[in-house]
Image (cartoon, rainbow, N blue to C red; front, top):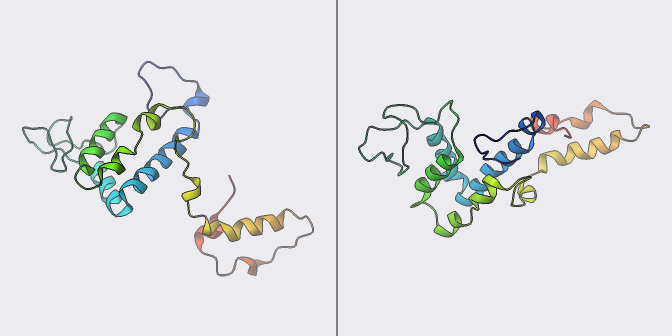
Length: 166
């Protein structure tokens, strides 16, 4: 499944509701965050969602991103957008904030058009520390002679208790 679909392209129900585009989308956003840093990426996402185009003659938002919607309208909130619009907004926003090599390392073509899972291995970069205790306890449960005790999860945080295998 691709992140950017061509108009007129037909898809089966299985393709349309596959978890692959959601996983790719999540990993793509995570990859972008790694490229620019969380301290810059989170404000960027807020700006992306909340952008209200200003009535400028140039059609350029104060962030440097080219605007395509009518002045005074919310450009992205609660709307579908084209992948290229996101790319243009992202690059314009970070052009003067991030080293050029970080932006050049983003293979937009592969992320948008290469089928399957992401073109970059990111799973090793995820912090799985909260899942460690849950995974160890799950292994115990595989033994049918195991008798669980309520104190085994004493002191666990909500994410540890809520961890489950997919």
